[in-house]
Image (tube, rainbow, N blue to C red; front, side, top):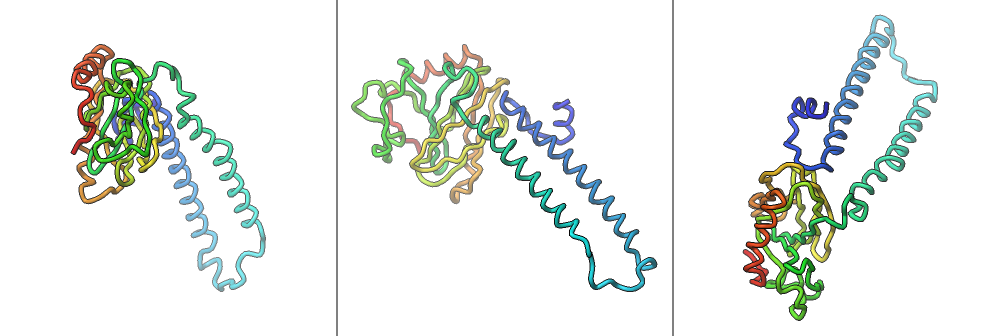
Length: 259
């Protein structure tokens, strides 16, 4: 059913497990808009008939004498508060809380640092452990703030505009920015997270289809904003992902600054 309505609405290709509820919400909202359109159009036609000139030859300057409309407005506002507090906020909390994602312990963890105008990504090296980091160490040639004295950070892998993840496995991405506010967006994964200087904000997805998917910046970040779409996420099979990471590990420890 979702696939059927996705084709009707021309939704982008869906390549993640956690993107399904997003598409469902989009479809439900469209059904709601249809219902509201039909309802308001019917009310409009009723008003044209009910207050036609032949039935009301003289204008009534007093207008409504009942307070029913005020009570209706209060009911509508109450329903909106219930939808926001009881449904929307808890759903957002569950979707954004990386501590509650399925198979968290086996998730692939990536650190992503946006810059004008591209995407840097850092992977743990062969020891599967990120080196120590500090925001006070962030500078032009050390955008991830890696402690140079920590041996565990010397084998970490850094890539530019070429992010790879395994299919069928949760991916936790910690998003930050080197300069201005960006927004990390993978349409196929239904993932969007602002990249804010001085912060590392986690977001996650679980890819379900192998392929190459474009990364977009959803915040106007400068004159070269358009070139932020030059980054891609490649979803590999577990075997191909391991091979790719191994090939990059051979050159690990190189400069962590890309232009």
